[in-house]
Image (cartoon, rainbow, N blue to C red; front, side, top):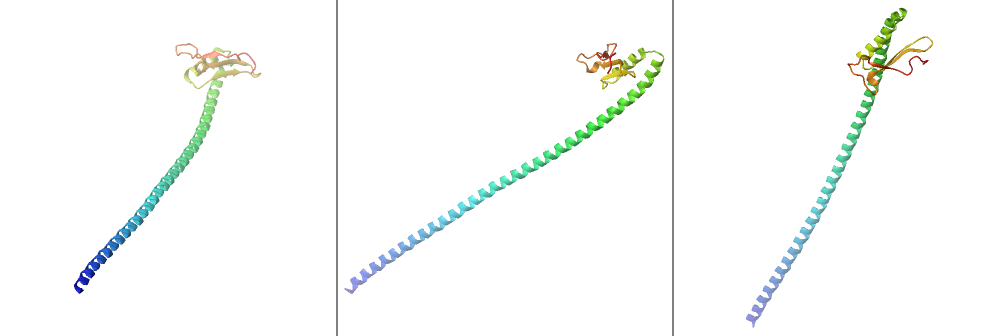
Length: 180
């Protein structure tokens, strides 16, 4: 009977070892699953953090780019406005100085002609001014009582422009012979 007991005991020990091994294998699988799930959740957290970081970085870059473009646009608009104002003032001053020079020169020439009762010289002088300078809009010769003896409008600024072949580069104004 002892022999049987040993066989039974051996079989029971073998079953116990198998059961223990099965439990250990099951525990190993559970631990592996837990580690895998923990690793996966860690990777998901890191992926979410990376996505959030990238999104935040892109938003920050876009805001900085928009700010830089706005600042450059404002600076360029300010410089353009200042340059335009300076050029306008300069051109206005240059035009006034040119006008004064033309008037001074013309008044001396016409003064001598009028003193000699040569009124045709004024018409010829006006025609030459309009012919040679497209920036002159009108010319007038006014007496001391503010009557326009001659008031000519350049053909360059009329709706029907004068041709170079035309003899006169001006038209008479409606103000000619009237008090201005």
